[in-house]
Amino acid sequence: MLKLNRKIGLLAFAAGALLAITSARAEDTSATAAYKDIQATLGSVPDMFKTLPDVAVAGAWAEIKGVQLNPKTALDGKTKELMGLAVASQIPCQYCIYFHTLAAKANGASDEEIKEAVAMAAIVRHWSTMLNGSQVDLATFKKQTDDLFAAVKAKSQ
Image 1 (tube, rainbow, N blue to C red):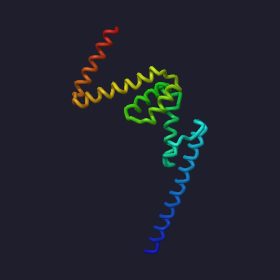
Image 2 (cartoon, rainbow, N blue to C red):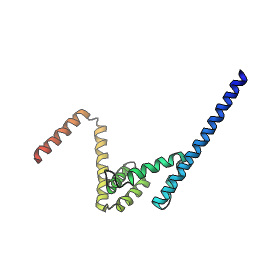
Image 3 (cartoon, rainbow, N blue to C red):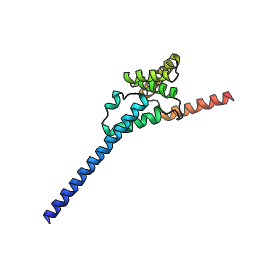
Image 4 (tube, one colour):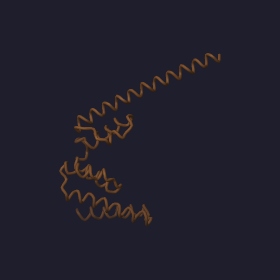
């Protein structure tokens, strides 16, 4: 009985190893396909993708291609890149700031729109610091905000 259990254990181990090898090959193929699509779409494969493990390349590319580079989303390319720049300014990420500034310009953003996106990021960060640091009551803040927007709406009618 002990020999049978060992054989079953050995077979289970071998099957698991074979499945792991098959999965690894599938992931490599997925990375290879993603690299080919990146090359076809962008004209080259930036090193940022090469920093990822093979298992993550296809998912990362699908995310960028499906949202950021997709012209058929709710937000246009200029808006997405200005948002990217605003967030990058707050992280802060030099790489992202450089990329999203050029991408925003490529999508039609003016220098003034780029400045405004960064200014909005600064304003939001400032007030987030003030509200959180002062521990302003959230329920009160929401009530005052709702009242403010109701008054603005009533005034515009």
